[in-house]
Amino acid sequence: MDSGVALLTIFILSIFVGFEVVSKVSTVLHTPLMSGANAIHGIVLVGAILVTGNADTTLPLVLGLIAIVLATINLVGGFAVTDRMLEMFKPKKAPKADSQEASK
Image 1 (cartoon, rainbow, N blue to C red):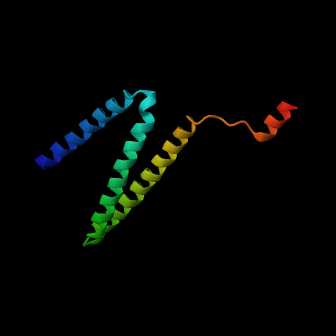
Image 2 (cartoon, rainbow, N blue to C red):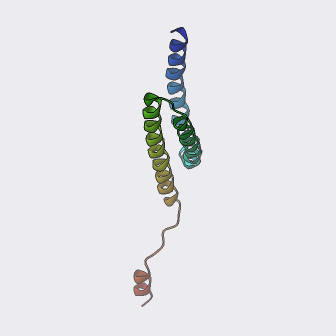
Image 3 (cartoon, helix red, strand yellow):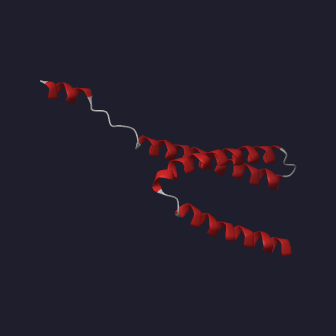
């Protein structure tokens, strides 16, 4: 039971440290940070698949499937957000119809 309390304490402290670290990141670095987080989420997904594949009983199998679903949602959502953020940095193209009318 003592190790469970220690693990819970580490988990709660890591939440506070993670929040402080991420909240201090400048706006310019958010896209690279998201890309790195997506790589980590990919590793989590592979790990969840490997653990679920080795499940012997129902409980680890169900928990593994839940982990796979959540990791997949997290990974796909992270790539969607990163793609949307990168779209903000692309130059805007003028529509062709408007540029032809302006030249007349």
